[in-house]
Length: 342
Image (cartoon, rainbow, N blue to C red; front, top):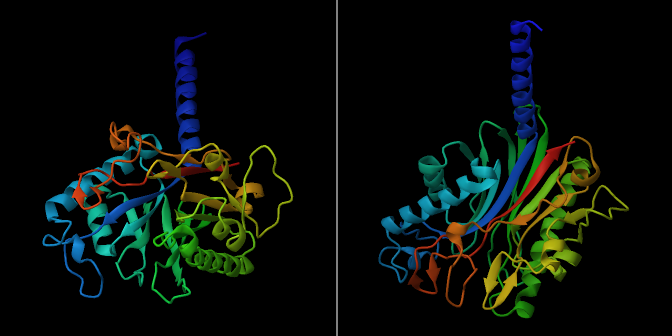
């Protein structure tokens, strides 16, 4: 074989492999969620109860501490997805769009922001960031959770994104349901209200487009087997080896098996809780085009943010332990899933 023909063949094989690698990478969408534990600015908002997170407040929350936290959050975020950063990241416990914008502008400049201000009294909201070279915003909506006691809580944020490459649309719902303050049983009615609100929100959109590719994410403050999830939201466990009886309005909980395996994203005293979860619509299980990569749900435990010793060994290294400043990352581990093209 002539030398120049050999060179052409080798060159073709190299370029072909690079093309296939690039193609496969582009066809995988990495989605993550993270409760970032009180990402507050240092400015007093007279309309919010943010006094403890001020330089003069009991947490002594200074610009230097905020800067350190943003750097640490960005470090974890950029380490996700094999050090490429997630394509889409839902966030909760963010005080306002300004502080999220500051984080993105300084440390995550490849990302765009989708946000709506919540009526929550403390001013801790949900938001979404996404890679600007992969997605563009179609629309942003939100629904209000009306609690039995009328206490204002976080909005449910719905962000519809479109892939720039082929126009495929995805609908993301970002949640931070009411806490268990006052006890799990006493506060359960509040999370049931949030579950019913989310279910109605999803059903309303499914009536407009029964094949919508839906991803629910958030800190639900309940686990996959609690009533707010199984009865109010009507999310059923997703088992990759036994899929059956699909319907267009079914919501599948990708986190259920992980919970049954004893893995958690948040540690309360000595108990692990899987309150951070992902759920998907049936179109992402049985549909065409892009689907959930079954079994890809994972609780991320980067070594950087794992507590190495003491009573909380193995737990996330938080920013605060009660009122004591520890200088960590967050009291929750991030979670992730992958969406792949068939």
